[in-house]
Length: 405
Image 1 (cartoon, rainbow, N blue to C red):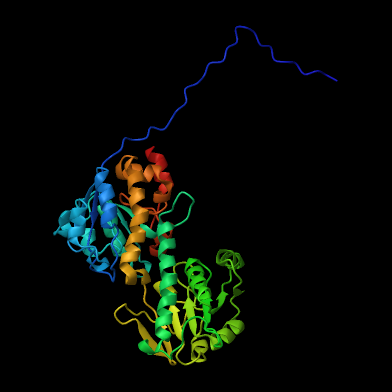
Image 2: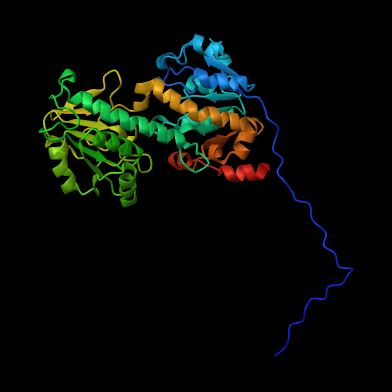
């Protein structure tokens, strides 16, 4: 068998270390942040609370808050000025800030005020979004970041999750009120009392809204059944509850039977391609008990109940087949102070962290979770879903970032 030759190493042979190329992180840059007042959308939340503003100002950042921007959440101009913010009475002047943070979509008026290379962090409302608005924002060459698409380091969506938790708590609380005589219900107490049959609650969906609603309903003694076609989500819900909860896949015959007995139905199904599939037909609703309550949290994307129609916080309910329907979109806005606190607790540390990365561009380049939310980058559409919806060209943000490095 032929032996392999060993490498011949001589004293003249030497190893020379190579220089390692390291990424240079930019120096910390002071941020100029603007918080506008929401006017053109049914929105009562504010993106940053006075306590969050105080932290930012004490870390060398400049914050401008439009007059009465936080009033609906009971945060007043005096609170913000004492925290170190400047109160601005001109929306156009406010939009001279490098970063604009909103809790409602960008209005047409605000789009006119946007500056090139300005970062605008705000929600995207797909049903009301149109091609003209996208084109206008492209012309302004802003960096547009969808508030709900920002990810944390673990790949989760912290703002969506926190708002979903609020919606789950709110849905159960609202259903309990609507069952009471005071609010025109048939006088049923949500929960259980010795010797009295427990309230029957049906929850459609097994996401965060459903988990929160189920946890609260189970905690006060209601009989809860959860429907979803994702077995993994049903298993996860069971683990999170820490106690047994009846679950089922979305079998129409089984669902109709449970709806017939239900006192409360919570619609919390996630949308598919931006639209929530209807799983509760009008016929199912017509067979429900008189005075029962439907809270369709999915109404933001069309609703999962065929009889659902959009209502408002001012006029939140209507009756059909003597079943009370609550179909208010943007439920967290109904508890604006709690929701504002939750949003602020997520955004303030993010801004502090990103300020160390060299301003708006540095935030996008170095913060992957923030980059995930970018849908417009200096005139280029980067959102695949928006490009597909409006049949216009889009470019992956990762390609843009790579080409600039």
